[in-house]
Image (cartoon, rainbow, N blue to C red; front, side, top):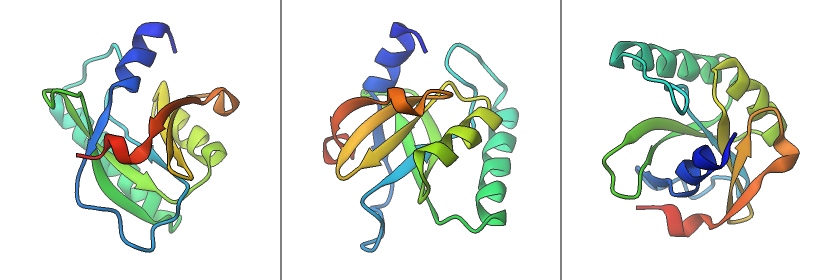
Length: 131
């Protein structure tokens, strides 16, 4: 992940229904849409998102719909908050061709480069990113 990609991830906000009250304090946020720098037809993005949803359900992972968005809300990508570890999310992100994903750990949001979960970059309070 280069500096330009990191800046895009660093400015992401999240839209959606509030997480359930019993949601864990540490979780990941992942999507399957075209990775940074690529453009896919809407239908391909939708199919990838559906494949990700089915993969989460097949292995019984608790998930909740969120939408990652640019700060101005012009660009939006359906995503999933998932009750899973960064290490497991790293494998899933790689499978779905993502350059990075997000992790929330005890209230702090991180961007995690795929393939380098130990290189997670803190982005500040998770609560500041909810809209």
